[in-house]
Each structure stands twice: as structure tokens, then as C-alpha cells.
Length: 361
Image (cartoon, rainbow, N blue to C red):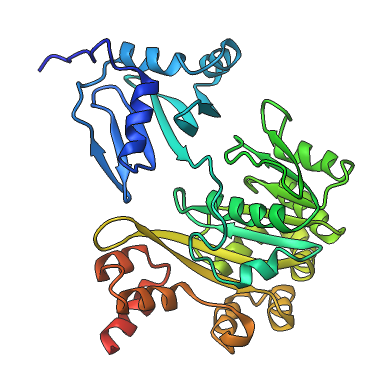
């Protein structure tokens, strides 16, 4: 079957605009396929012609500047964000496949949602009032981490006069100064790296620092230091549970450094929110948020290398601690008829525990 070229009228800006009308989260342009969009976690092809390598290259290069094109041709990877007037804001990743350039676009709301808009728990408004410490929002790609963090910063912006520095790759949500002052930095364009930006951030009189991704020991170490020295630090990791997040941070460091990191985490960690988006019955998505909030018992378990006991601690006195497990949230949504049993099990970080509870109901 011969490859059909996309029609000349297929313009990537028009395509992005039309995709928004579907309520899609992502657009994919890949050679050998018609454009595809993601709705409620499922990819769906659009009723358009199959793209060839020239089609994708022309659409990709129409959105970037010469420097970005040069970087992409040198490294075969490119991350950036952009805004199209009267259309919306997008995060993009260009990469190369065996057939040519491919593009993934993520839709970013221009209007930053409030914490209340997505039904986040009231404890979030208390957490963001902290003067110092580390708050982590974790989860797989596409789990809404960036949206939750943007909502937290937006709440600070509405209520506090603080200097907020964000370091992202790339910058996603663009904040307008309301009560707070924002300094948003794009790794690659405005700073060499997360670690470099964090090193100098402490000289820029910040109250709050957002780290788009805590991906290496140097960045994590700098984040812990900032959280210990009187700053409220927000960060993300790709982990699927709150206790697992603590283990991931510790495991990034060499054995002889781990005792010190455990001590730093025990004293500076405020909370971990581990988030997953799950398709709802009837369409749309719902978030489950496993919430760990440090207290003296959790601090001791981190310090004494007993992270495996934290999950049990999360299940105790929850009305007082405001903690919850993902399993509890999944059961609650199942009982309310929000999600299917199949999707609950598929997205669970403890499927055996979940199945046992379902069978007992």
C-alpha cells in the first residue's frame, strides 16, 4: 500500500486548535500514521491522511526557531513549550524514529485551575502555608503532576506575598503575578541545568522554589539543602507510591551518603502526594491521590531506614493525620460508581491488596 501524503491544508496550528475541541490531552505526529490524539488515556486516530516524513518535518519545523532546529539536529531530542494566540499553550517533544521526525504535544491550560476546581483535599491549602520544607508530587507521565503543582503555586499567589522561582524543562504553566512575584526559568534557554539553577536560586531571595524534575543526586541534594535552609520547595518524581518516593530519593545516592540523606529527608520532608489519573465511567478522568504527611513517627521511620513501615503508619488515625492510601481512594471511587473494577486494578500500586478488599465487599 503506497503512502498517501497529507493534504497541503494540514497546518499544525490548525490541527492543534481542532484537537483542543475534542478535549484531548495529547497530539502525536508519527510517520506512517494519521495524526492521533489521546482522550481519557486512549489513543484515537483522526480521520486524516497518513503522514509521511516530509509532512511531519514541515509541521515540526514550522513551530521552532533556528537555534532549536540546530539543537534538535545535533541531539535528535528537543523539549520546549509554546503558546499559540487564541488557541492555547502546549508542551512539545520532538524525537527521531527509524522513519523520521516524530512529535508529541501536550495541552496545557492557559487558565491555571484553583485547588478547589479539581476537588483537591483541604489539607493542600494548609501544606502550602509552610515556611520551609519539601513537598513532592509524584506519579507516572500524564498523571496531572504539573497541574496539581501549578494549582498549589496559584493558591500561594492568591493568598501570600512571596517570591516564587520555578525551574522547569520546559516551563509549562505561566503564572501572572497577583500577590506573589514569579521568576520562571526554562532549563536550556534560561539556565544550563536544574542543579545550576538551584545553586544560584538561593542567592535570588526566594521564598518558594519549584523544581520541575528531581532527576539526579546533585539536583535532589540541592533541593534538600534549600528545604532545610528556610525555603518551601516543590518537586516531582516519576514514582507510583508515597513510600516508594522516599526509597527512590535515597537510592539515588551512594551507600555512604544514604544515612545523611535519610537524616535530611526526615527533617525536611513535609508531604508526598502520589497521583494517578484514571478513566471515569462515561468519559473523563479522575485523580487518585495517595497522601503521606510527615509526623514524628514517619520521621523516625525515614531516619532509621524503616521506610517499609510507613505504609502502615499512613493507615492510622487518618482523620487527624489527613493521610490516605491509593487503595482507599480506589475503593471509594469503585463504591461510588466512578471507575470500573478493571481500571482500578490496572492503575493500582498494590493490586493484590485491592483485589482482596474488593472480594471481601
